[in-house]
Image (cartoon, rainbow over all chains, first blue to last red; front, side):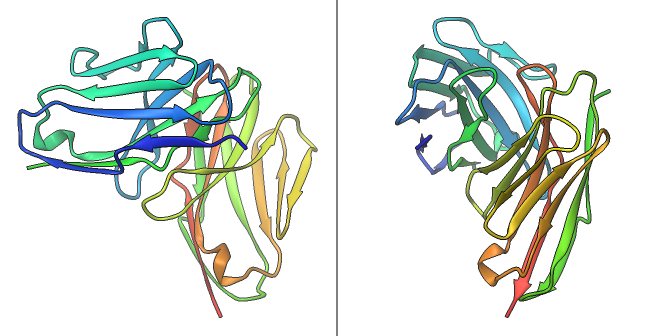
Length: 115
Length: 108
């Protein structure tokens, strides 16, 4: 149980392109979904927290106009990286939780490479 | 500032050689201490949640323990398939604060 699917697993695109990443909880309803960014040999850094039907809460230093988050249902959240540039290249990982007392379950991440 | 520090950064063991990974945390109002396993190119896989000092949880060759300042992940008689990066995270509000992880390599 507690499976989170993230798609696509890898994206390579040109600078200036917008990229959408999907995160789905397959076998549970996720009241809260989280988006992280991970650099090699570094911690997962929380970018934003989203609750179904509400605006996402962004961490300090994360541009909300660049990283658009939509959490339209209890099983789906999307992250859109708008007008991506090479410095946006990273490993993006989503997680989902069934409630504040429940652990977060993670997707397998999306490797984004901007040329 | 809430912080999680893991040590060692890397650990090499022979198959069957037991050891422990350390996670030190400073957080106000700890709601949970989490352990995850992460394989290369994958997302973290949930292992354990610990809520209060003195609590222990086990799963196969892994046992997690918690004190007021630290958590340990004990690995008993590890196998090569236990090779991975082990992440520790603390939770105060809704967000998790992750350490950088310990990369474990077990050779046969």
